[in-house]
Image (tube, rainbow, N blue to C red):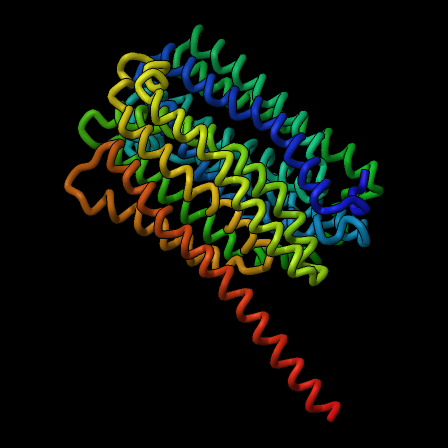
Length: 442
């Protein structure tokens, strides 16, 4: 059902409520899955599991070409007054993502095993490594389906889909790791991702039917411009994903590298858990910000941006303090070998404070059509993290955590500066236009 007649406050509350319910299950299941897999396969094998996941995420970013944000923005703008084009936009996004995912999966399957072993620093799991492309393909489709639902403000349906995906991932991964070890856990990821794709497809079709939007592939060539629109978002996604992957693979090549990868990822899972609500606020705010910005309601746009940023910062503060105090106990949950990661967890918990503001601010730049500014900030952040680690003769999980904190401490004020420049520039343009109109009238 359309929600255009409701106030921004009620729409935001509705979106956050349903998205929170779904993401609690999704993030909770991801965290519990990581803990169970780590305890079942051990620290070294869990490091390999993390490398496979990191590679799949990198491939998703490369293959997706930033189309998700462009899709959300267009669907949010068109859904209420141009249903035919909304259907074409969705059709183009789905078809392009599917083809791109299949191409990536085929490339991974065609890559010589020696190259995969050398790249991922693994001497085992020959057959299982081939599943990286498959996991990336289904992950790309899951992401684009979720972005469509966000653009339609169908947060209840998205919550149900996330619930199903979370339960499937938890049950299948724990079963696979317990019976077949690491290969079983990786196969379980592929199966759970495919099944959740089916669920997301059903949810999107149902929501579009209720709104009178017919998903079509006819005339989708007219929507190829979405790719150029998403070019800067593509640059941001690919840059950040590549940097994260390079750091992960480089860390694995250090002394006791797989254990260091495992420790950092275990701590990073808790960082992701803390940030789930700010992430939801950013996702829910994107269609609202795009809608208000498109209709010239600048005051509502800035108030919504400020409110979401402050709310995200407040809700992160208390869990951050709790996580710092309980860091030894939390890391011990993954196994005795992970207790050494307490300082890593503390640094990543502190980083949640600037990250919560950064997330909302970056979505705000996308909604305002300032993806180029977002790309510049993301490149700066990635450069800081990468140079801090790779310029050292050797580095550990602790160094990666320091790099993460430093990069966000620099990037978050830059996001604020970009928003100020956008607002100042628009104000100057309006004053100039007003002066010209006034002179013409005189």
